[in-house]
Length: 269
Image: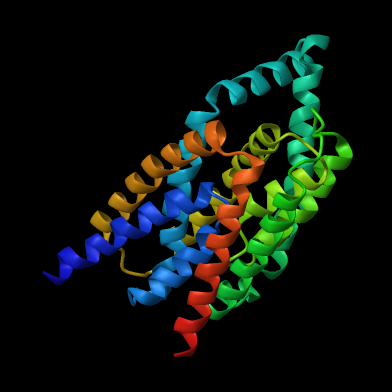
């Protein structure tokens, strides 16, 4: 019975990871809160995060497969075949790389020193709420069509703060993009494609760390969490990409505020 309950916990955490990785409500904050509530073994948490993040990564890769294929094809044609028609794709890839450099550097330098508890996650969720509310207040602004070099740098600077548990990566990237007056769908595309770029080295490093550790792993639970993460990330990105508008961000802002407040209260009582 205990083993069955433990597997249910992993399934729930996998679903939470899948949804919250895509929606601007912080996967790290929710996983920190729920692992605390479920009294999960935090020693195995980095490996669990690596596995479920890989599920989200594959879901996004599948959803944006045409975009990724076009960017690869255009970049290859421009660099290898000197075909000028692929120049725009090559430039877009460079902008994605520029946008993930800050978060990559921050992750290497300070991620291991960051607190990972419901109190910290709660305050960070409230910050995420404030950012989303600010962007919601700018909903009547006329949006630009393209991501410029300056936009990519600003989005990268915003994205750097996503290493703090409770700060939503998609939320802060969306906020950074919308403050640059970029259309929401273009911000989402840039945000999730930059996530794919940074996820490759992060997943490889996470896999290496997992192979070096001697921690016990619930293989059934981890496998089910991986599947749930993939399925619900795919559902969430389809919903977010096709239906969410800037005016709807107020709902995510309110949600983050409530969950952040509850996280702080649960930690203190």
